[in-house]
Amino acid sequence: MTVEFPALALILLFPAFGVVFNLFLGPRYGRGAVNVVGPGVMFAAFGVATWAFLTLLRMPPGSALSVHLWGWIEAGRFHSELGLRLDALSGVMVMIVTGVGALIHLYSVGYMAHDEDFARFFTYMNLFAFSMLILILANNLLMMFVGWEGVGLCSYLLIAFWYTNPQYAYNGRKAFVVNRIGDAGFLLGMFTIVATLGAHGVWTLDFVELRNHAALLGGAAATAAGFLLFIGATGKSAQIPLYVWLPDAMVGPTPVSALIHAATMVTAGVYMIARLGFIYTMAPSALDLVATIGAVTAVFAATIAIVQPDIKKVLAYSTISQLGYMFLGVGSGAYASGIFHLMTHAFFKGLLFLCAGSVIHALGGEQDMNKMGGLRRKLPITFWTMFIATLAIAAVPPFSGYFSKDLVLEAAYDSGHSWLWFLGVITAGLTSFYMFRLIFMTFFGESRVDSEKQHHLHESPAVMTIPLIVLAILATVGGWVNLPGGLLWGNAFVRFLAPAVGAFKPIVEASPASLSLVASIASALGIALAYLFYLRLPGIPMLLAWRLQDLYNLLLNKYYIDQLYNLIVTRPLFWVSNNVLNRAIDSFAIDGAADGAGLAVQTSGQIARRAETGNVQNYAFVYLLGALGIVAYYLYLVTH
Image 1: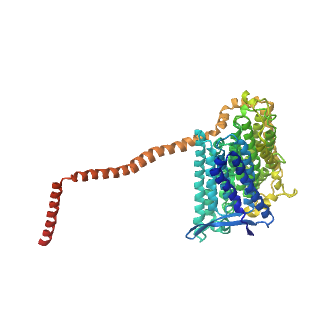
Image 2: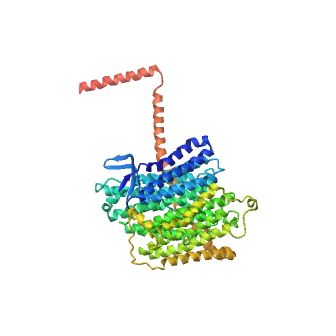
Image 3: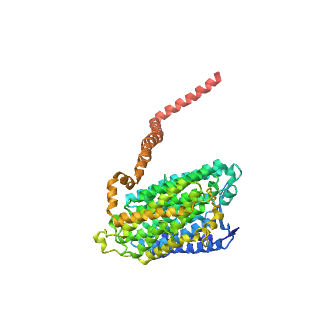
């Protein structure tokens, strides 16, 4: 059943108000007002979202809340409206975006306390939340695309927030361009759906209507649409081959990394595939591609993370890797499993980024872990909350990541992708290794902090540590909503999402009970190796880096993918742009045509000017010649 719930519009209205206030009134009323309004509108949106979600929980399974805003597009037989819809899937997402988003906004008050552009920062943050909520709550694919583009714009604005630094501005443009490439695939996927359904007389992109008429797509059209839409997902959710923008996005303020590049925007691709699961279910080859790209990306990014010295770069590649897990889940047909890991990831990865921000804040902007060490006594709250988040991402029971990662790996195996399951297990071991490497290098051992910074080390203020504590609690217990089957309310989260995304249909009849144990052993080995290398025998990493120098440099330079892109994509495009488009077409053809037309007019004007001498005798003579010409013409007519 679907019930009208007009208050859904308030979830969008509150952050929209924050945008208008911070943009036009924030500089006038000052930092205090912005610090109240910026986070305040997000907490207000979270309050309304909680009200709506609790209302949904009291309704029968498969129910939804909706509100029609106004008509939007009427083009022939095609129609699309602006409307909002909250079902189980969008309900989970809106609680994540508003809840985690509100905590990150609150944290930003302390983190951006000394930045002069505080009003512009909160304008962008509120605008991002507004766009992300449009993407989630949209009742049709076209309106989802509006939010999709909105978060891409806000990502560009926030990555390049400190735009006076040329490198930061470049990284923002890089994110914008790479996302536009993916968005082209999204558009083509939409056009494929419209054209195919339109041929059968169905002219809509409403999600309910698409689900009801999905059979009309047929296997070929569903596969084509699935492939094209997944291109959009690889751009937004940083998967191979369009992942290259996300590591460079770390130049933005750390709260931006937590909000956009860990908890919300980068998960948009996973959400889109889960929302359109009824199309992907009809396209097994497209679904296999999603799972394969996810698993390969997960292990690929994890190998890069194990050697990075920058604390935020480690977390950036960790995000890419964990997003790969989510795509492995939804690509296995277990959409609820992928969304479950999306939720737990928002808790522990958002917390990891905020803790990293707290460390960077204490060290006056330092991000190199080689210049850290021994910080756990100086930053106790940051240490313990980050340690909890690390246990969660390392899938240590009973922390949240254990339940979601285990469910994803089980789905991969049960769907017949045993080799993808194996890649997932390897990634679990690598994840534990690089995350505990980060913990040991940052908080344990002898201090390597510069002497002038030693005296200024201090824990972050309460406005920053309170969000850390709340997220640490969620990172601990957040996975308990879906305990294993047969244990208390086992699989409650999966059952809740099933009406919205469909039930998982395994191929393997009964997976071995040892699956979970194998993944746990891999995680434990990763932790043990990190302990051995970075606490017990800290000289081993340097020895291995020297002995395996080529491999170490390959990983440190991220497989030279950026250089490869520059060689096979950027340079050829610049050459074509400069030599073909600029010189041949723009300068020679277009400018030549325009200049030629101007020269022709100028030349004809010069000729005409010579005839206009201003001499009356010349004009009289020309007049006489004209009169004689007319007389001659009439005489010719009379004689013939």
